[in-house]
Length: 234
Image (cartoon, rainbow, N blue to C red):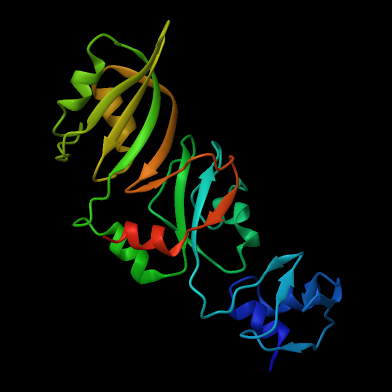
């Protein structure tokens, strides 16, 4: 049996001091019963919850998919006080870290985990997982898909694998493109669009490898299935 302050801290939920405050406020339960300061539990056997959300044991590996909204930064904390992805997944029961990035103005599929080996494998340059984006663009629309697909370097000379580009929808003044890349360099799709004479008004990541965003609502997260985890690492 361990003190609940230690369990909450080890799981990455909060500091021990903050855990004491949560316990005093009656926000922690063990097997459905409110726990007080000084309470103990077995993290492997007891059901520990904070504000109704399960607290994962420190040894548990967490693999999450978040639908990141626009305006949220892909960091655990922000000195400027902007909303972070960590706040959106605070109820997951552990401290998780983003795998890769989506800039503040971009939306869609973002993976988070506390499994360092898993994150390193996905981020390694040799892995080159396909990433698909739906991009709303305006500007030089005629021939834009061909221009994007023909790019082999960014404006700073960084080489890129040619993207696969499809036109999903045409409407007056703007088109929606599907752009699939492999490397995921910093702001790569936006930089490609700029080179092709296009202005991006919306960018949504809808797929990473075999994993699709699907109908997951904006700002919500879910755990990956074991099959999805395995599929990402093949």
